[in-house]
Image (cartoon, rainbow, N blue to C red; front, side):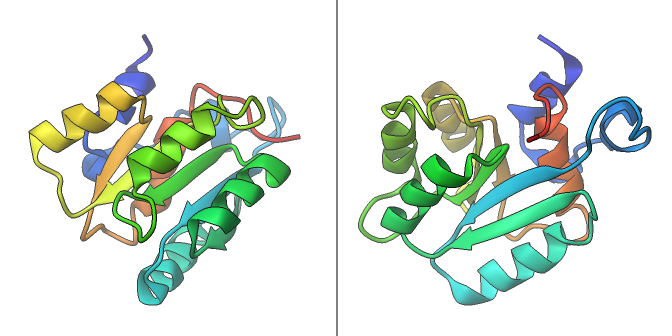
Length: 158
């Protein structure tokens, strides 16, 4: 397990900057990452999108409901999904189970965003296969870096 994978399975609010191989040397690999953000609250969707777009190498698509999120994940094939853990109709863990049950989305890493960031909840999300957990409220300035920390072991989209 790499250091990045270890940091991705912990609370990411203090995640280190990504290694140079991700963003500092574009000649080594493409540095464009697609993030699908799933959040039902419009204000949080806006802040997250603005925060992620502070990183010029991140492209963001936002979804406000489960059906749209599942369709976008299968069709757009993001590098990672950043998802609210508490959604109407179906919660984050249920959505994760649907993603894992579809061969088109089974391998896409998922980071949960939650106000329930107690260690027991983080452990539960880890046990379900989450790539990471970001506590709400989050720091908009470091959000992109936290997301990229979970991308360090996965190649970017072509």
